[in-house]
Length: 74
Image (cartoon, rainbow, N blue to C red):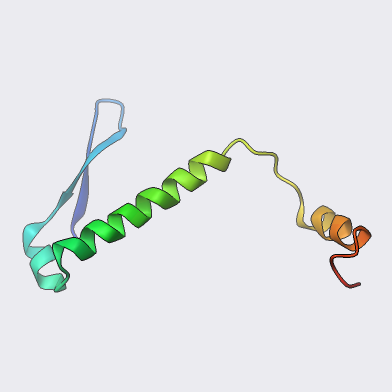
């Protein structure tokens, strides 16, 4: 949706979302549609935050490990 803005604090951290009412009406979406989309976005952000500090493993290393365990064909 167009015309979504964020209210931020003095440090630039997002604190609230403002949706332009006219843009909302033009989109043809219901309030329930918008809320569901926003909740899905929030869930995605929470998932990202949950793994933010996890160790990063190179794809080549993962492939080699899967091959060694017989879970991936050569």
